[in-house]
Image: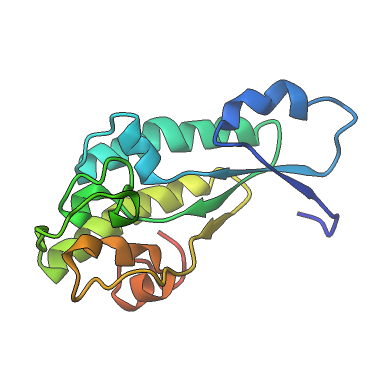
Length: 176
């Protein structure tokens, strides 16, 4: 990209409906910002498995991201690797105890090595999808969790980019 200034327009979680609006000739230096979370995939019926998430990312996120990039620069302004499968419980699209759900009986379902492999496989697919666009921003950190002492928050540490990189879940160089 050049050093031009851009107006970044959030899609309201409806990335593909803005084509006619954004392709009008009066718009210049506009970029579309979309937020693509696996929680949204779960709400759409995505199978809660590594393969299910990978397929959904390829068939929906990557495809839509590439299609939109054809007519306007698009960034994934928010995403993370959080998913119900790695959390070990169906979070109903990312619902938590803050939404009144009780996962206090939840236990770790995976060893640290298994969890690392789950996240690495999912993140690799996500990073591949974002290559079709103009960039991405991983959710930076999450403070409202205690994944060591509170079973309600198992898996939620994957929102924290620093922790995800430290544990080897996210590649240190940001590439798949």
